[in-house]
Image (tube, rainbow, N blue to C red; front, side, top):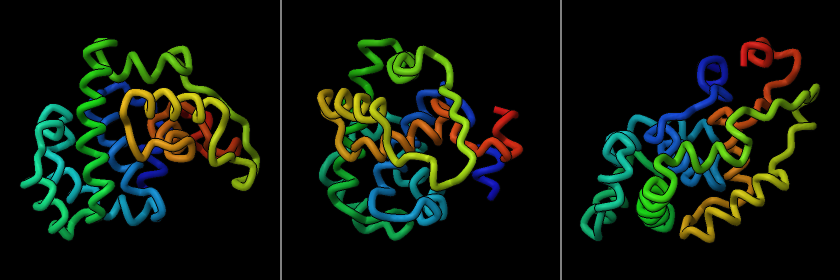
Length: 172
């Protein structure tokens, strides 16, 4: 509840935090978000406080360390993807100045505001998340399918998917 009440849907423009959510959303694939939130501190320790520069430099020894770290999801493919995504993240920063400038251009710099009345109305993906996913994949990212991208958009406030009767809807 605290995550929902304080974080989910708040617009994020800090590259480190955007990278954190990319890693966490990728790790969440096939799992519950609560499972990931419970391991968030472990991820912060294991992934150098989500410094994309440091994670991009991780090698085979780091992968083995992470596979043995019970404080995170020890899926080798997801770990490798996080490292590769850090490298692709840095390339986007080089091209656009910041990852923030790159990702927020898809919504013209301001959150999309939906007006959902029931949880079952909220989509798992949208044509926009499909387009962003395709672009990210074309840049070498992995574990960024359209559903993961939409979850990232929701978490980082690119889209306001709080229900209209939720107190956070108008706040955001």
